[in-house]
Length: 473
Image 1 (spheres, helix red, strand yellow):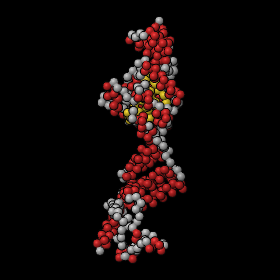
Image 2: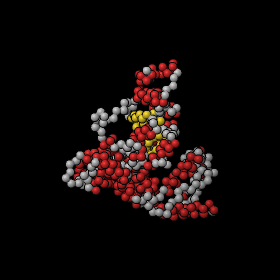
Image 3: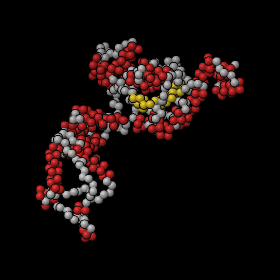
């Protein structure tokens, strides 16, 4: 009778237990908890039992953490997750990485390994009302001795208020939160949530990892793909580090009828290359512009052109690139090659006149010029140093001898008195002080011994000697 009562529903079980005051034997308690937990989640009916077709990526999904490919840096014995599982203490996590690297699979297997109920939602489709139901169901499970691992895909798409809603349930142990994001958590997630979860970076799959995945698929299908060695390499390149995309391509190829192995060119004709992972307003945007800038700074025209092409291929606005390239001329080339800035502005104007794709060649020429130009950030550093000094000295006025004196009253106050007109001075240089009275002279511009700045350095030193001589006269 008690077992029947347990399976009727949670409220009746709770009523009888509170009045009878009995304790449940272990086997009964387990069945009771299992029954109750099933009340608060979708029924787990295997797709194959219902006769539904299963994609290759789903059929090949790892059944244990040891089968996950390409993420040993987080799953190894001495890695973060390996250490957590060995100690039996799984904390809330945020998986940060590109698509198709195993974020969902690892979360599901973590739930299996820790006997937690796995609940999966997507921030794109889940509203506040559904979150409340999920948290309430997790509380019921917890009251019945079962924890909940809540996996939130695209967690960065939740707004600040929604993210804050997870905090009390994480803190009291109602849920172990595992979030997945393709965007930088530091920019997209609340500091409060990040302080309660460990961020783990999952890597895009390398060619060796993808090849292991192909071989695993071939063993499952009991057939090799009808591809030449070169075409097989092309297949890995098409996947672009995404294991799920690779398995989708493998599934397409596996049904092809071929009398002889298919070559790379034929493969490219039959399959569309996967679009590059690039978000013009996301993490990839900042990563690639950083790579372009640093390649220019490192005087590597080939790498710089590669990253420029990657951004253009991903759909980046060429005008944004033109502006950033001009910034590179100012920041990294500077006065070591004053012509660099003009080259960038000309390339920008050329793009405006020609448009895409012809105008993009002009941007490529500018990038090549910058990469090969002599480099100096002396002017950039000088300006930043002067800005720091300007903030530190507040509102000090210029010395009176260089103040403008358009009126008689100002002249009577000493404005402009003693000013030396440099063109009338010997060597057209007076050596007067132009900093505020009482302020120590700052030295901000220190040109490099490279390119045109080598000549500017000689001039700086020349005027410094003249200034010292005038002050000693």
